[in-house]
Amino acid sequence: MKIYLDGKFVDDAEAKVSVFDHGLLYGDGVFEGIRLYGGNIFRLDEHLERLEYSAKAILLTLPLSRKELAWATAETCRQNGLTDAYIRLVVTRGVGDLGLAPWSCPKPTVFIIASKISLYPKEYYENGLAIVTVPTRRINPAALPPAIKSLNYMNNILGKIEAKQFGALEAIMLNDQGYVAECTADNVFTIHKGVIYTPSASQGALKGITRGTIFDIAQEIGVPIQEVNMTRYDIWCADECFLTGTGAEVIPVAKLDGREIGTGKPGPITHRVLASFRRRVLVEGERI
Ligand code: PXG
Image (cartoon, rainbow, N blue to C red; front, side, top):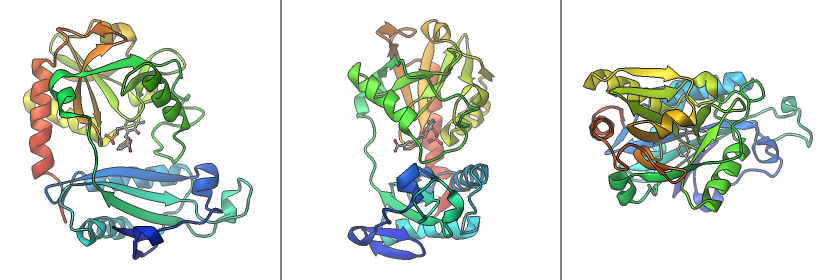
């Protein structure tokens, strides 16, 4: 496997970063998870724009332009002969002294991995996931804005560990006021009386690229969509629920904390959203 690392394509065994890289020492850096479908990179420009905003928010100057990053991303897929892949684009603060100071790091490290992805097993897309609410709260946006897709995922990882301890693959994370924020690596949507709802980004949700796609799909299929302050009550009483993310795509939710949502089976609007999403990923996007 060829990895893009600081301007060169190297074998995975040679793709190494320093133990003094602040991405490793402090989680100081930003990243994107991107998908390649049938030779098209899905919403690449939106991912690169989010990366630029993440970098700006942590005062990290990206060493490559959007065009250069787009080329490096596509070239990583080409070098590996891939047509369907999961792409991980990472920019760290780079090598510096011990100590937090980011200004001791003169040069950011950039690497891109393009590899196969393992999705949730097919049965969950047909029958829906059973998820749980975990005790770990999503970090307050005033402490770490969730819009920054940083290398600090410990909050989400604690949520993921708790989900597994409760026997679930994904978890609802509440914000510190008790409102639904998002899942550990997915955004959450409910459907009630023909309207799609999702927590607003200000409640602690990442502005997911897949989440953004759902707004376009809602318009296409003529279903109203609203950002709201969502509580668990709204999920208990929803007709349908689904999660979205680059890895998960659009996945129906059948149960929350052991309670069936709606009929306990993926509902009609979820089916329409999923069908539209599957069509869009093949036709939208940047040809490599
Ligand atoms: N919330 C969080 C906290 C995320 O990390 C999403 C929502 C969904 O956003 P997108 O832009 O993907 O629609 C994410 C995305 C992984 C993996 O390796 C994680 C994500 C995406 C892809 C892979 O587990 N997180």
